[in-house]
Length: 144
Image 1 (cartoon, rainbow, N blue to C red):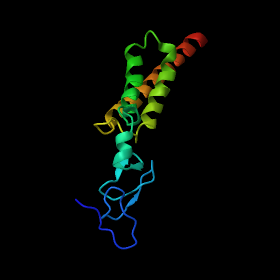
Image 2: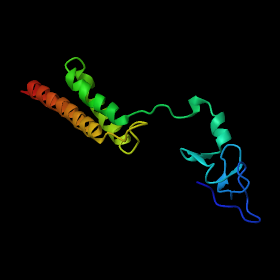
Image 3: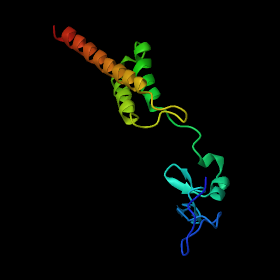
Image 4: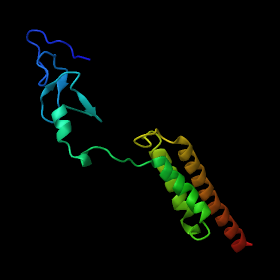
């Protein structure tokens, strides 16, 4: 695969003088052809700048928000007897995390896990419902 051939007066690639420049490197400003353009997220880097990057600057992990929502939605239901006053907060947290991460990528190798987000929302709604039912029960017991 080759980049477009440079014509008279065109900007040329820093690494391939015979190729027309497609854009400039976002790090060093060198002109690069389509062959040398290395997109990294929303940035475009030349091979030299990508090679100079520290491994920590490249994404090596990502938060899976749908799995966090699943944990916040299901774990308090399993262990809810011990933390029942916190159910309303963890329920809201589960719903928030599921909606926050709905369109975010799930991991570096897989897409988002929508089933986990839906399960987190259901768990959060069950938690809020359990707190409301318990509150109604206490209200009934106190008033009658």
